[in-house]
Image (cartoon, rainbow, N blue to C red; front, side, top):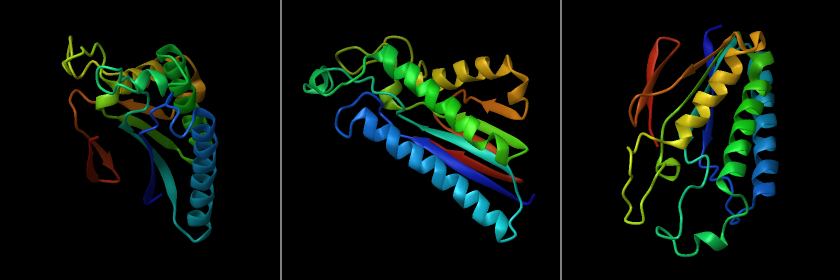
Length: 177
């Protein structure tokens, strides 16, 4: 193949009632199916796609509390455990959706503000801003996939900072939240 397909995972903010968890899940399913249709259409038109990059751009879960937004306790449908479980399920579903369409899949992502762990009420982070659920989800999914040969063609690339680069068909592509 001479072309890679990029699919981004961004600003799900799972758990928020604004758009609603069920609406988010329905919309995401549409996005996955549209991406598969796009790959098929590109291939039919003669574009050889053999690599898929799944790039998490952050804010997959909602980790803000009332010290940041006073209305937040009234705007959540899921607690953090439920949000984290759903985020992992969605990431794995995304990987599973693209498995039949590529010889190589790269799952990567960057940390973002809603994923900061151990936030204090003064907007400060107790540990480090890189102690982040956005990258934690990728690490856990990586551990899951390492246990199953079905995922041998999947590589997980986790950044050591707030920004990340991946090599896509000889081009260095950078991304951040």
